[in-house]
Figure: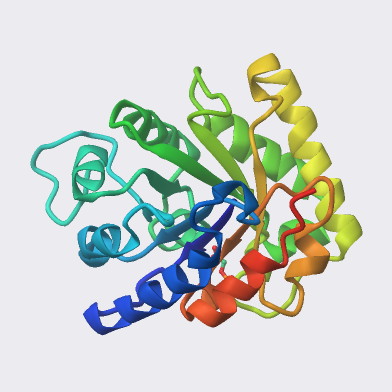
Length: 250
Ligand code: PGA
């Protein structure tokens, strides 16, 4: 899976990028097995319905957050059933920009994950350490706590993907070494093998943080990496497609 997170970027005119992406993916139409990977775009909520219309199933559409309740007096929030109704099939939850800028706790994120599942959405759950946590050597404990505290009972490969996104790599142009990415992905894999156990075996683990056309092939073809969550490089179809094309399906 290669997923694009547009964050708070994109006006109606930018939907042209989705037409361009669809055209680039069009070469695989009629032979979906040949497409390098599953593709997802998470535009801002204002564009979800129009993006879903434009995608026409060529790629999936997702939200960037949802509320823990299905409806109610929560001014400015969006619920999972609303995202689904607008055409989304996925939602990103626990992104570091939500954890840090909106002070979302893992307990709150777990409630949102549950709400997303109830609303029929697949979740991309983000976890990741800050630079100071890495410098103090606590990154594995931080990611373990975020993972276990953000995931309710019932998680499996059908309803959830994990995205490992070191906070210091997001939007910075800096990525961890391949060895550090592999070490953390293997750590997360071993955590999932303990909890939920068997059901966790196939849960995809994506890497996120400054993935771009130049480093995609190196990162995406690591055996421990099952895909990418891409921010800045997902805004332009040409760049995003270059990341997708770097996936070697075998
Ligand atoms: P970036 O963002 O690719 O711009 O670093 C990734 C993300 O925040 O998901």
